[in-house]
Amino acid sequence: MPPGDRANEKATAPRVATAALVPVQLPPMSKEPEPLDDPRRGDVDEWGRSERMREVARRVYAPLYERWFRVEWEGLEKIPTDGGALIIANHAGAVPSDAPAIMHGIETELGRPVYGLADQFFKGAPFIGTMWARNGGVVAHPDNAYRLLREQNQLVLVFPEGSKGTGKTYNERYRLRRFGRGGFVEIAMRAGVPIVPIAVIGAEESMPILFKVPALAKALGIPYFPITANMLALGPLGAAVYFPAKFKLRVLDPVTFPDVDPDQPRYSRSRIMDESEAIRQRIQEQLYDMLRHRRSVWFG
Image 1 (tube, rainbow, N blue to C red):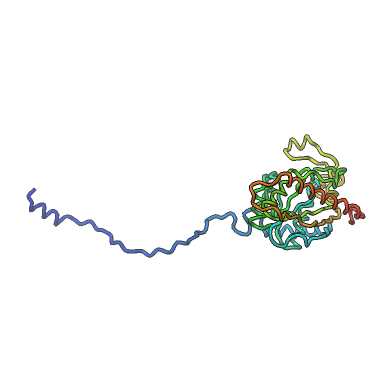
Image 2: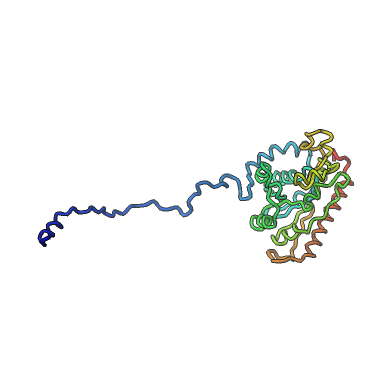
């Protein structure tokens, strides 16, 4: 092609349109974008506790607390009104009635939430696990207890006897079982909080175990399968209905460890066991004293 024709072709070739780059003003990005689906919205905290649910539970439980068990406290002022504290108590009843009484009394009288540590079994139970968590139940693990006590300054309730306490038969009532390996003492030392012991009478008689069926317990994968006096008296209804035993709760002087620094990697095992046994003995002595002065199981 001649050079002139090439020039004409360039001159007549269509031009490709190019869009002008116009600056666009974008809205500022938020520093913390809201999650689209936050399961903890509302009043459910990281442990699963819901204050709205606790309020409903307190309203439902109040007649049982006030008129059925007629709970009386002694020394409630010894429980701290601020800061973390580990509350411990003796444990009893085929379906324990002491935990809700303690939690209800502290929350209504002192206005402080209480988190109750319990076995993993409750968390894994359908529906019951959710309701248990919504009402302040937390899996009993040292890390959970430490965070609640040290980092969040909460009141934590634990029963050192565990299922050995609730599995006692009626002829063993008010005789405290061994407090495990004293793990609750080590947690209190590590978190730098006091231990507040409580002696409870009444729970033993609210749902007393007459005997247990080990074969059924093994088949169901539970610590024990009780046959209670309530079942014999009330039939199937007795599995959920308590006897109206009079409850009395005595708060003992808090146990502190001023000579022990918190957050240490290790603590003296012998010191932990000695402190645990001393606390167990204090609660045992108070139980005997309360029983000596009790006129009636039903009227106190």
